[in-house]
Image (cartoon, rainbow, N blue to C red; front, side, top):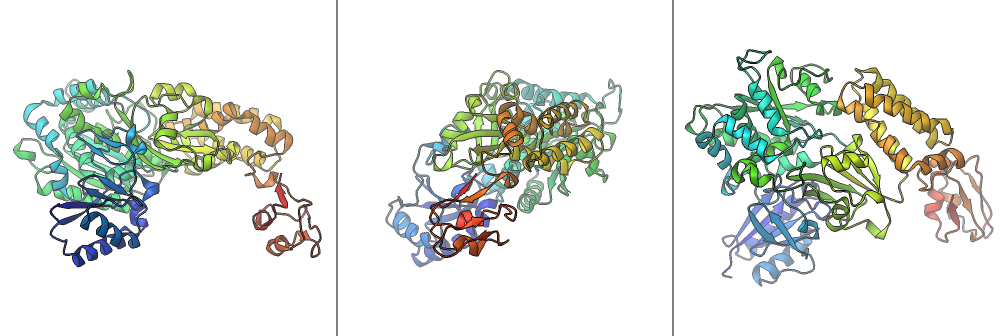
Length: 604
């Protein structure tokens, strides 16, 4: 065999949970048995984004992606692909191309075909624990450029030129935020006269179904660090902090190693790259409070207090951590910075829409064929994301809605599928961009139950500081429970709208202000389902148990299987005779419905 091969095994959280370590062990054994250890290099990488197809194994040259690989597949892959040079069609994911900002690679994807990877440019490509891999793809080149060729003011102007907006959800212009923080503390500042400033990376990602920031850090921690160092140089800070959830141990471990390696190579610490600029980064672990995603609550948590938001202004850019000017951006925003510097803000501004520049990372989840991590140019429609990239709804079921923006976002029905994904268009449709959660919902889901689920989450995560959020969301949740239990009245729907709008206007922080969004958007777009729950005591999706009725039809052959599995002895009948369900005893568990082989039990 004359070819040299590189085999990359995904080492992201999803593939680790599917025992990629066993796959690597068998692979190394097979290579040794075939005397191929000198001809084949085995690498690890972060998440490529194809989470539903893990474990993922990629073989180069040729960029062949193998999905759902098991240990039993490895001998065949080695024999056919490595020894004989014939890719294994049985496991190979055959599709179009993956576009990476710095090079093109051909392999999978309808999944990748409409993506453009900027923030995720290295994820799934490099070994996140090997700084040399990052350096080989222009890593820390942007930092070298700003330290040797650019003044802090020029860096800020470049970021402003890019049009990059904060990817944490609010969409505030990044360059403007940097400029405000840079000016704070100067002799002309009306507030703090201190030169001490801080840079913070907000990696406190707590939305249900969201894994964008965690995967980005696991796959390419150095790009986040490089962005933060550049931000520190631009505003005149010497200290950076990554605030990340303790529940993300893999991301934390890779950050720790990346920081240690960056210090060793002179990218962090005193006199970086021989310049007069000194900057270091530490990690602070969050305890999992959703509210700490809000920047003032995050700052209070770092300071050692309970994570609770405070009124703004003053904004953190002026008075932040320990009362000092503080620049806070989220993981995705920082990951874009090296590209903005290297490829220019002008180039970055050509991607996306007029007011929403660049790309956006989404965690595509729910009832969609291709779940995973994606990155698309701003302006890509919801239809393209769900059907072209996501592969549509499993089992050819009908699309019902898509939830964007996490628990603070809205549920958009099919009429909005052609809505471009950008800040203004999503807001106009009645939802938000948020940090990048996107959950697809099919017709087997109850929209009242969906609203209840998200409100239950935000109500439970409320810090309790302000009355509108603390008490208002609790009252809204009580009403939703009442409706889903078949006890609702028509005035309850109006009360939900009234309470929701009051909470939006009166809550202290952005999390409280957006908490009613799932309820208000589902009432707006799926009001008929609320009315069915109230008027007809019916859940069309068959999700709300208290509104269900199970009945045995004339198809019953009297086998007795349903009677045997009923946990409350609600079914009676003799052998070979039609059975009956006592509705007063039935607890709507559905065990009989699942057990019947003759379709004799219906759910109404």
